Image 1 (cartoon, rainbow, N blue to C red):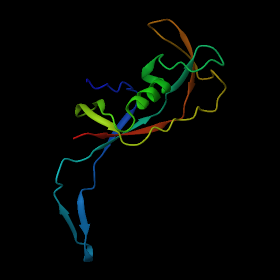
Image 2 (cartoon, helix red, strand yellow; image 1 turned 135 degrees about the vertical axis):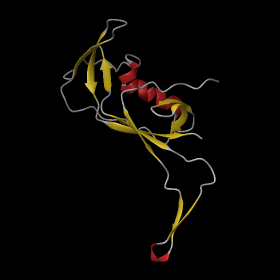
Image 3 (cartoon, rainbow, N blue to C red; image 1 turned 90 degrees about the vertical axis):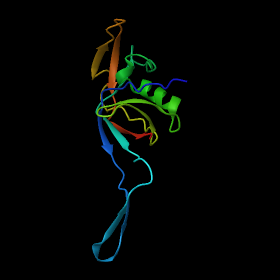
Image 4 (tube, rainbow, N blue to C red; image 1 turned 120 degrees about the vertical axis):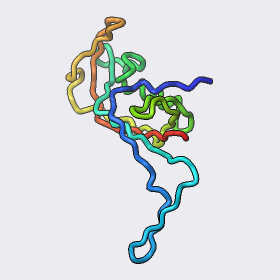
Length: 146
């Protein structure tokens, strides 16, 4: 079965490397040993903005429209994978890597503005105009699978 690709490109990634196997002894001496296997690298993804999209005021959010910055498309992706199912992530320096979510998704709240105040976004393929409601910035964590 082919792995699904993470296609939410509007984020800033950074990697967190493990501290390694170190033990601190008396007088400030620190012993370090080579790890027995590959490093578990956590990639933090900072999303400054994603959007809730709907066509008319009061409509339910559209879950599939403009998926690269639709928060509900990201939620659906998370629900398909949770923290156990691996997927492909286009890493900036490592290329495409196999990852899984390291922490659960916490859905961000909508920013306190009037409905539609952020504006409208038009889907270039279909021509449909969506009302956009921005959500608060949030972070995801992924574990690169060795």
